[in-house]
Length: 367
Image (spheres, rainbow, N blue to C red):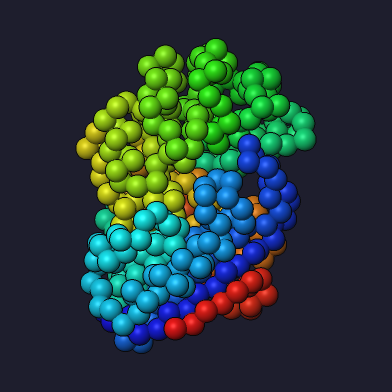
């Protein structure tokens, strides 16, 4: 398909309640939205790098700038029949995975709409439903956390993820395990620790956690491999996996037993599928994570969560969790909390609500 038109938007969408992690507190999620048009069809892609270089070195502004100045000139007017062709074209641009991912997702949506097939079918998804867990940030009190967990587990969520950082550590886990000794729980450290914290990290084995997500530096593989040899709890790498090469090397040196695949962080659906394949070939657990995307992006995550080697409930935020006004429409639907049922219409079957997009856009570009 020849890319005839490109539209880009930079968005700052406020959320209902402040969300606190090891990076700090957010009051909005910043994203970049791309639309590709060809032969009367259109495809949409969203990435949410954030408003500051905390989770990664990229922001919505840097992503928008690289996409506008370097990716659009390469893509506009070119023919593409696959995500692999797009990735090959963009390979000379180093890094900038979020910018690449926005175009990769939009192309997958465009191609699958033209073929008249759902994205799930296009990517090889084998499950009709996506299993999802619930994530809690740092709250004001342990009582607030226990009440929240009680609500979510009673609704049917199969596992709980807890943000874990200095000031919200083992005392928090003690409180949770005293009430829920057998609940499937894992913690997400968001790179808050180093090997100097080895004694505390070893002590986490007693909590019977499903995994410890990204305990050490965001770009580290070697220290994670050292840590994994000294603890029984599986390490899950998140921020450290920004490419297929990162995943391959992490597996080779034993840096993790699980990988959290975030399509935006690794450059799109195309590399996410390659990492999923690597995990399956090497008996490495994998699941899908989100970054605060609207329903446009979380629908991408949900589709990827139907892949055959995904073996842990993914992070796909309930549509009413974050946003005052969700950008994507129609919203993901649930038959019951803890699962999303995929729709069988062509492509992603999600587009931005243009009234919401106009309200919260910070910048736009058309080519």
